[in-house]
Amino acid sequence: MTELLEAEELRLVEVAPPAIPAGTRAAMNREWAEAVLANPALFDGPVVLCAGLSREGRDDLLVSWSRTTYRYFALRRVPGATVLRSLFVSVIQPTDDGRVLVGRMSRSTAAPGRWQFPGGSVEPPTGDEPLDEGALRRHAALELAEETGVDVPATALTRCLITYGDDGQVGVHYLAPSLPAPVLQDRFDALAAAEAARGRDPEFDRIVFVGSPPELPRLEGPHVVYLEPVVRWTSRRVGS
Image (cartoon, rainbow, N blue to C red):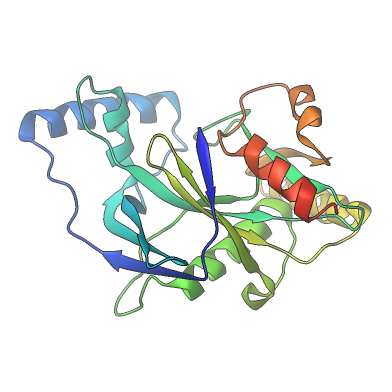
């Protein structure tokens, strides 16, 4: 089950990374090596873990986070291991007729065939830069551009929703300005063609425009757990 949350303010606080016993770490490294053999496109880059989510007062939310790399998520394959989940951002890109853009992850990604909104796991800041709302918004705008070819200023994105899953995964969702569906399709097609010319797979291999939850079963393949409740929410807010 995915809980949908709204907040006036969102505060992010860094905490120490989780301790991993030596034996568990060795098993994690073995699982990661096997995963890379199966999918050489996997990259052990920096990523943010969500260590906790709590209310601050009545209207605000606090996210506790820590630093790790993608290798950490190989713990999911280690029996008995405790695994924190990632903090991610996504962008709800509406059309001017009230539908929203949903993409299918390509074969070279960590989740081929999965349907989701444009977005991805948050990366930790470098140097003295803070991980704050501005950083999340910039990351969301970057994901939208890289996955769909739709380039909008980060300041044009509005935080509209926070999702909290049973597995502890927290998603921060931003609403983009609406655009006509043909414009969105043209920008995606241009991006996909440019990636193909470079000999690379795009992160999405297909996009569709969805107006309501009953349309989702037509999308063959797995869906992210938050997709149905967020589409339901957007169909009431964006499509109204």
